[in-house]
Length: 138
Image (cartoon, rainbow, N blue to C red):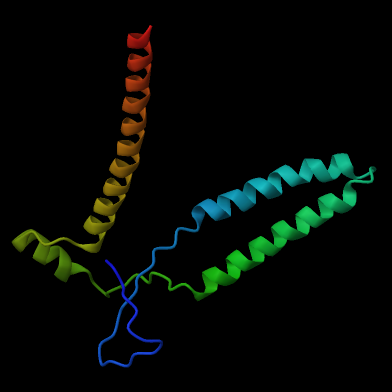
């Protein structure tokens, strides 16, 4: 997709819907690791002149954690729809084979697992090809 600038401001009756996928789990994990690693460093550096630098790092990590939590507040939450009785969806599933929300969640989990495994397989094949090429070169 290529965007070409026509003017500084353009008014049209059309609109764009932009969807962005935020995966914050890696950032949460990184902050958690930093906090866990900082605890022993603070204990070791407590009686040294480096304690001020360690406290600066600790405040930076706390700042990152605060920014991440404030970002999470603005993101929409997936709200699960609940019915008094979910017989309708189960009945349609039996009659016509339609998917229920549980089926879709299981499907998404399976696709995510397969995607992760596919990346591991590709990495392993690339390593094996590298070993094979190195062996042929000898």
